[in-house]
Length: 166
Image 1 (cartoon, rainbow, N blue to C red):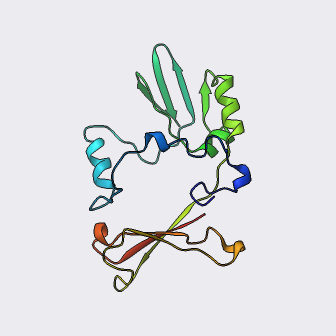
Image 2: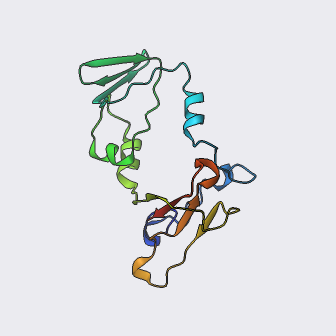
């Protein structure tokens, strides 16, 4: 439930671990300086526009147009990675409309809420050799509250913890 930010009754028994066959082997790790370094390297030479709200995506055999207000961006292809809630609200108009099978999948799928709370402390009190640790709660009504902590002191340079709240 915690990792999926949803009640067990809403999770698929057949597909809850669908990503497991694709997981990378080896230890998990944090990138020194944070994930921004990886993002910057991947985006080098790629134009990025901030503060744009996409209204419409027109697509077809001739390419794609992404319309944000009065601006039109053209490309051969586009990868749309908006949150499921944006698709459910139909906040972006697709022209032509998405295929029925995709619309049905968007309608069927649900999502939970998973928040991260970043905390900075005067010193590392949880142990210098810890990357993560969990916390079990005695009370069921508080389940999912601060259940997993990521220790960021090795990557942030300071005594920081990031807690997950589902």
